[in-house]
Length: 428
Ligand code: PLP
Image (cartoon, rainbow, N blue to C red; front, side):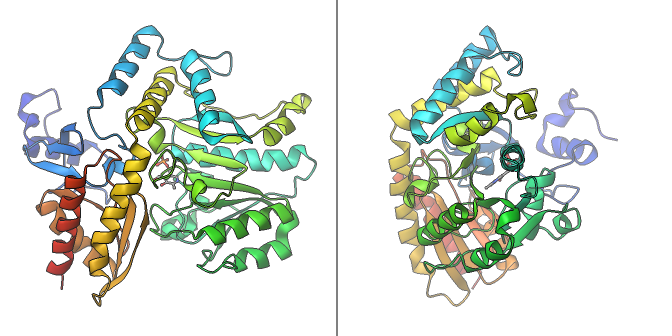
């Protein structure tokens, strides 16, 4: 066994990786990390430094969550101040000031009818919460048979049990652990009637369906849901009495060039899940924002004990303080507009790759841009080539996903596009 991290000998990159190999179990990776894994030690703006001093332009915002980049002073100061004053206070028993203020702030951004926010800690928990709210909602209304939860192929809604069951297409293992009551349908297509599979399903099982889950832009699947399809999904949910859950864990708070992804289509959900852009990676927080109508159904049924659900860290005060400071920065620095402009710059530059025989598609919205290639191996080579050139991007299946922090500059965007074009041609 290697030395523990208190030993100064492990502070070299090789030493850290050796300890990592003995003690750390990484999510979403083979059991052991590879020798070229980035061991990040510091960050500033859109850049991170590896333990060996190498510097990278992080065009994937860590896990798509570092929307303000690294070292954002106003957020760090707000978190530190809140930690010194009161780090947390149980929301089941009481409340705390940042949680109250952040709930109001989110309601100001979403606008009516989305006025009510339940806080949790991760995107998966937010989706789990949406699913539980939807099933409880129908049960409280006297329709416990309505338990089916519908999601679409290539969706990713999280890694907890129910959220993973709604992401069944994303992993072969996930299928094996899927509990009953979860249905995966083909993704709505580009045409206005692209929700055909959902229409057929609801025609047969509408009276048993609790909720339909959609990502306006798929973060892992890399697909964009056309606005017309989203409107058709909304209309079908209304017709059959199912709740529409929009998973904006990645797209919420500016990523797509609008504050929320749904604002491109004008479709409003019954339940809105957000997380990454809410605290920009400075603390762990997620939110489920819903309508007064859904809340009232629970509120009117106090005798049935309301919504029996929550987490120790629901509405953590320092995390909510981070959220308030993040939203201040997003608004005062015009980062939603920057996401739109830099995203358009990136997409325009990548259009050059479209005629290449091994490029299947170039698509995106704001700073969530995907280049789909003819296979996972080529996408992996593109990612590796870019890393060698000092630019970090994400790969999911055949897609190279580019999602830099919303603070990315014009020059940095050009650097990302140049690196990507070079990497794509290098695989010819
Ligand atoms: N939903 C979407 C659209 C996501 O992109 C993610 C995470 O990548 C999740 C849910 C799950 O969030 P978390 O990883 O915070 O549990």
